[in-house]
Length: 477
Ligand code: SAH
Image (cartoon, rainbow, N blue to C red; front, side, top):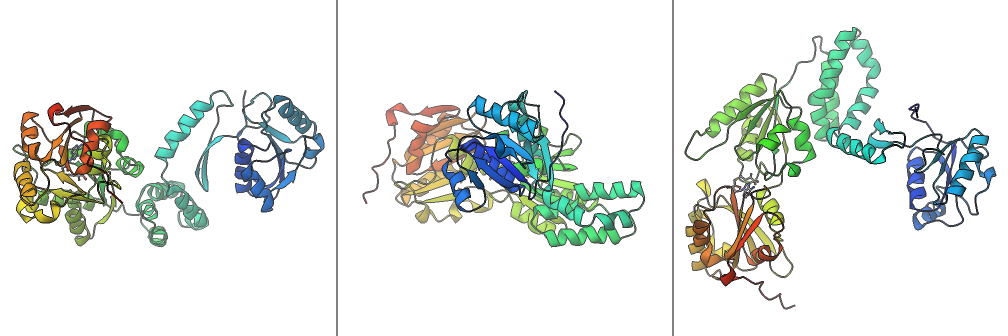
């Protein structure tokens, strides 16, 4: 079957939908979205359709199907669950030269309704002529990921200035270069950042400048999440695919790097303990140098860039040097590790607050407020805490945190080699030694950590049977 693809302008045109159920409702919604004048025909309507009729948005023919319903229609959709009615609708429509679609019935259909990726005014329609709807859905899903949500605004902007662009860039090659810049450069990033006025100003500046628009460099600080490639955000994936240079930490795995643009230059600036260590100042210098050469730089960090990631320092440095920059958040280790270990970080009965802390570097344990951290009914999520676990445990115990407070150690959280080790606070240093815990590992201390023993659903679990921890009694109201 060969189909002729078309996009129809149905504004103000009468169209008919036969059927009163949820499928008919979805068809009616889509047609209303195109400003069609919709009549729905069915003896009974579902709640949503009935409401549309009440609100006067849709006309209703309340009876069994009659062929005369099609008189004067431009388009009809049969969405009943009775094939003989659907066939009757199709026959009546054909007789009157009204284009008809029968839901899930390619044979009876004169037109097909595609799967759609909507970035209006940009719309991508996908059809397999009814042969493989599941494949069409898959293609749609892929495109949903790839096509930036700011594209709609970009297309609308280009549409608004189309004549001016043609005038100012009369030479075809020149115009093509301008569009390449427009589709791929700073205008799109500004739209993504919800700065439409600035985007328009840059477009106009570039258009009125005489030379081809200069390529402005930029830096995006991107959170890669905890390691599992599926936990990368769509936005992170998109900027990785536009990057010229990627400066990444060691925590970012090869699977994630593999998703980035193939010809992007990848630079490992991972701060390793022991071996090679790139100082922060050098990372700053590298970002600056690449951006000043007009490159799109992605600074890719594990988890979230602003949670123990020095993202704040990098952003401040870049802004001080006048480099365009933005930030794509990532799922931080505490959120991800807790989820994969089955630990609810807050719980109505066990924890009303969460504290993310590190026992490392500038914030060594002695600067932390141990008295506050030792309070019960809160959850501590400790980053980079393995080395200082002994000192931290001693401080918490000294300030009155109960020795049998549940703890969980999550090593390589979200990755295939994830290990979850559970026990109590007093045995935390021993557990770390005994299980030879390596980095990266997150420590969770608090009543909710007990849930891990029961509910961890990913990776291997190591609970001490003789010290099986149990949940504290629920709060008495
Ligand atoms: N910006 C990152 C944290 C960087 S600090 C974030 O938001 O997650 C590095 C520390 O994060 C590690 O020492 C460890 O404590 C924790 N961490 C990061 N990824 C982890 C993972 N997959 N599993 C367990 N801990 C992790």
